[in-house]
Length: 102
Image 1 (cartoon, helix red, strand yellow):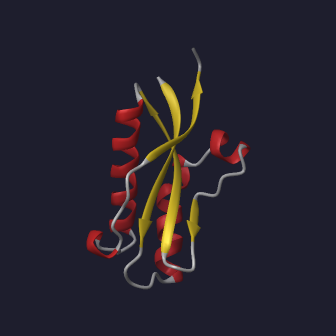
Image 2 (image 1 turned 90 degrees about the vertical axis):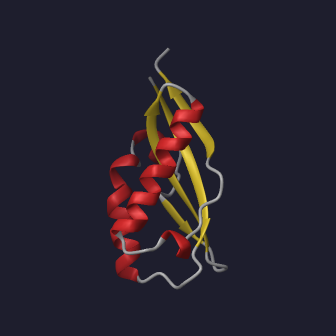
């Protein structure tokens, strides 16, 4: 298995409350650990134009599986925070880091 840092971009089409943001960050915190923190990457970056980037670490066999898993995790965390999929469309995920024990 390889640990991938995946960046999932998106856009909030409605305002996000501080409460929803906290729930979102708490829901994803376990996926933001040593690799991303050592690189100084923030879990969630919110921009003034309502775009955002979420950076997660996932363990997967390959890049494709890692991107799918990261997207599923972000989608579930948004739902848990009370944010509808239609209110926060996601862009294509991208591998932004790899830590392999090979």
